[in-house]
Length: 492
Ligand code: FRU
Image (cartoon, rainbow, N blue to C red; front, side):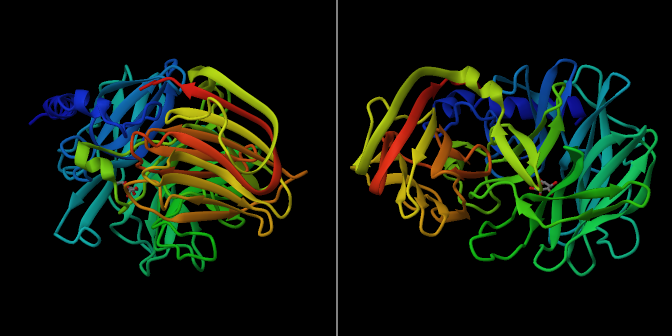
C-alpha cells in the first residue's frame, strides 16, 4: 500500500469514532488528544509559516501502543487546535514497524521531520530491533514525503554505545550547522545522549557522547532535547529506570533536565544535577520549541507508560499537557502555562479575604473544566489545602495538602475515582507564609502550578460525572487572600 493510502486509512479509522469519543465524560476539553485511539510522545513541535504544529506518536487503529504513526494538530495560538491527517505512516523497509519519536526543523522554506525508523527483528522488543534516523519533507506543513536518501543515519556509532536502542532525534541549528541529539544507552545499560552534526541535514557526522548518567540515573535516556535558556544550555531528557529516592522518582520513568555548558567542538556537556520538570504522576517525553516571541515552550505526554488508562475501554487514550513556558532562574527551571490559555476563560468568580478553619466551600467554586487561582496565607504549622473533583456521596476527591511543619506539598489521587491511585510529594519553602496554587482541571486531568511555576504536579484522574465540588480545608485558622475561578471553554 502506498503512503498516501496508509494515511487515509489511519484518518478514517479515528474519524468513525470521533462522535462517540468527543461525548465521553473523560474526554479532555482543552488539552490536545487524538481524535480517537492511541497517543504518546509529542513530536515535531514547531512554528511554521505562521502556525504552531504539533505531531505525536499515534496508533490510529486501537487505543493501545502498536505500530507508530505521527498524528498531527496545528494551532494559531497554542490553545485552539485543529486536527490534520497523520503526517507519517510506517511502511518503508527502514520504518516498517513504526515511525518513532523525532522533531522538526525549517530549511529553505520547507518543513523537515526527523524521526526514528523502527524495525523489529524478533519477538523480544527490548533486544531484537533495528533503529535508524530518517527524514520527511513538506512544503505546506501538512503532506510529507519521505526522503529518497533515507535512512540518513543508518546505525549507532561504535564504542560503548548500544547498537539498537538509538532513537528520538531532536534537531536544531547552531552557527550554520545542524545538530542532533539522540537517546541512547551504553553496552552496560547506562543512559546517555549522542550528538551529531551536519551541513545539510542529509549527511551526519557523529561528534560525541554529549552526556552520560552516573549513579542512579537510569538504563536508557529517551527523548533528549538540548537548547539555550537565559544563556545556559539545558538538556532535557526522559531517563528510564531511575529508582525512587525519598519523595522523588516514584513514577515508572522520569522527565527532567540538567543545566550546564556545551563545548560544540568536542560535543561535551558539563552540567549540574538532574532535576524534575514535574512532580506529579503523569509527565513524560517533553519536547520544546522556540516561538517567534522567543519563548521556550515545552509540551509533554500527560500519561505514564504501563499506567492503568481507563479511557482505553472507550476508544481513546493519551493526551498532552498544557503548553508550558520555561523560565530559568538561577539553576532552576520555572514552568508557566502559556498566557494564551487565558483566552479560554469565562464566567469569572472571585472571593477575597476570607478567614476560616475546618472546611469550607465557596459560592460558585465548582466544576470539571476550570481554572482556579488561589492565594492562601498559612502558618508554619498548618495542614491545609483544597479538595478537587469532590462527590461526597461517592466518596470521591483529589486532594492537594500543604504540610507546614514538614514543608511538603502533596497530591493525593487515592480517592479520585477509577484508574491508578497514589500520592506524590514535593518540598516547598514558602515566602511570607504565602501559598499560591494555579490549578487547571480538565475532565480527566489536573495540573497544579505551585508558587508561580516553582513546581508543577500533573495527574490523570478518572472521577464520576458528579464529582465537581471543591472544598478548602485547614486544621487552624488561615486566610484565603484571593480565590478566582473561571470556566474554560472547549478548544479541541
Ligand atoms: C518514549 C518512547 C520513545 C520512542 C517512542 C515510541 O515514550 O519510548 O523513545 O521513540 O516512545 O512510541
